[in-house]
Amino acid sequence: MPVYTVRRVLVAVPTLLLISLILFLLLDLAPGDPTAQLPLTIPPEVKENIRRALGLGEAIHVRYLLWLKQFFVNEPLHLLSQLTGLDLGGDRLRVISWQTRSPVVDLVIERMPQTLWVVGLSYVVGIAIGLPVGIVSARHQYGWFDQLGTFVSMVGFSVPTFFSGVLLIVVFSVELGWFPSIYDTTHRVTGWDSLLFQLRQMAMPVTVLALYNAAQISRFMRASALDNLTLDYVRTARAKGLSERKVIFVHVLRNAVGPVVTVVALGVPGIFGGAIITEQIFKVNGLGQLLITSIQASDLPTVQTLTFVFAILIVAFNLLADLLLGILDPRIRYD
Image (tube, rainbow, N blue to C red):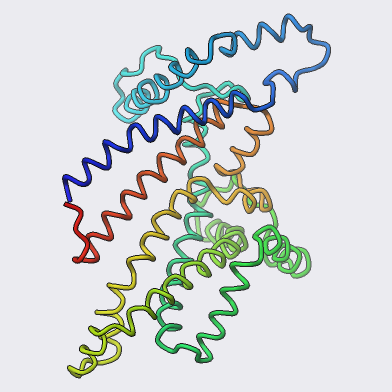
């Protein structure tokens, strides 16, 4: 496995460089002007000077190489400087947002806690619900629990999050007044009362996303468990007199969880990308909303940096999923 890991990492480097080049070219060709939202009274020559100050006057290959240097060299040095207190970054140029004139990485770090609080927690809740529901549904195939789980899963997977989010706001916020409809990103937990308010404002967005995640994971878990329940090793375990609980949770679960691990691992980058629609509905000031506002403002450095970070996470967690499969299933050998 170490040889396979090194080989995959070496393959990931040119893959990410190719992705970065494609992203840069697509965003450079995309319509939009960073000076479009400026007042119409500003003379054209002033707008042209602003474009040149933003680096748009350089050739495309020069701008691409400069961005690579800023992202892979300058930004890590600045992060190390903040962590260690040493002056490693110096006066090196960073990736600067055209919209806020602040470093993009600082914006990402600022928005990350909100995304992890809401979207990350919803993913954990979805996994905690989806795995046992899938196992029990497979164990009692076509029973009342399986029928109910299938119905709820189809509803959770089919109903779009913008509809379920608005529905929860109308029912539980407007009509009943139980939960706030707008997420307060400035709220800080300092005591039991503030913690209760934090849980109340997280309840609806977490429920919307957890229902969707649990529906997807439970279906994969059910299908994988059903495939394993008909295999010879399960019949052998039952013939040896093992209890049904031990057969399911010791033998079947370990072999059935493999495909689910892939689904869960590949879904983790979506946490950092944020549920864009849900964040917009509940006004969660996370990474998803940052991406939307940057696209609307033609803030190409922010959009490019965020999308490339998501690409890195997808490649990394794809590798992690393969490695976890090799650990969980002894039959899989990569070396």
